[in-house]
Picture 1 (cartoon, rainbow, N blue to C red):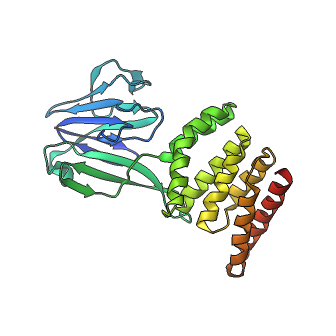
Picture 2: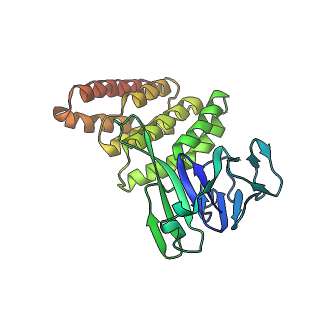
Picture 3: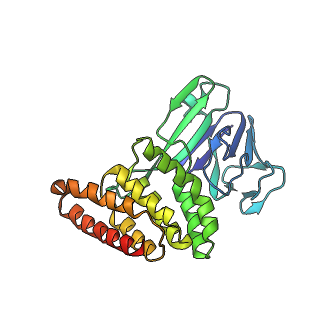
Length: 287
């Protein structure tokens, strides 16, 4: 009997052995979920059964809505909740097993991540999975970490809604730092990721009244050398009415860089540029 876990509309087939789930990159499945502990849970698979064990996690492991203690057996159809991530246990027909995951007896390491798709697409994300087992490296159509800004942003939004700005800032700071540092190194930043980072930075500026988060959003689009989208501009207008200590020079430099590109802009970008000029005037008044 073979088993697999259905997660994010993808099936992870499990070989015999242990399959650890947590935030730590050494786990077979690494989840970027703040509700998941570094080594949260372990599935143990043998020829006839599959067990799940809570590894002393902070938020526990739920099987069919019930919190477990230690190691318990799970069966096909059971739902296992780890952090905010749900897994469905499934049985696999023997004749359907094939491919690189079963080319070795060692359990592969899997990193899962939600990454943005093309901004014009109706589906704003795609999923990719990479499997690694010893020297075996077969990259299937999946990701490196799970849900990044989507998960963290959801947690931060709840904190902001409850007036807990510092908690939201703490949740997002590491991911926002990763984006800006990548941008400063010249690493291409996907437009959707840039928009998410800039929007969250502007929201943090509004909530914390720290002008540095406005500077962050401006720097992202200065580096990209294009107008910020309307949703970011809206958030920046809100933020600039709340904060005073912004880097006006950074805003002015951004506007001047865009003005140099103005002849190549279409009507939509010209309209965005006019709104960004308004941000410059507001920053000057507030600064």
